Image (cartoon, rainbow, N blue to C red):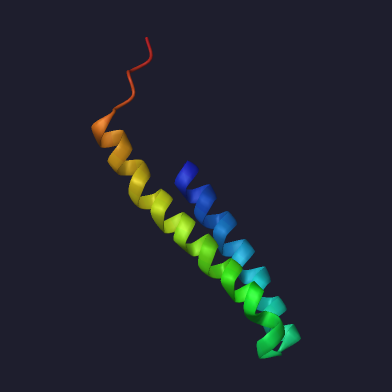
Length: 64
C-alpha cells in the first residue's frame, strides 16, 4: 500500500514538473526541473529496491 502511494506521488510530481518543462520551453531554464525529476526518480527506485530487501533481511514481527 505504501509503495503504491509513493509511486502515485512520484508520478504526480514528475507530471507537474514535465508540464512546467513544456510550458517554459527554454533549455537553460529547465535544467533544474529536469534535475529534480532525475533525483526523485533515483530516490523512488532506490526505495522500491531497498525496502523489500530490508523486509527480507529484517522481517517484522507479527502482531499478537
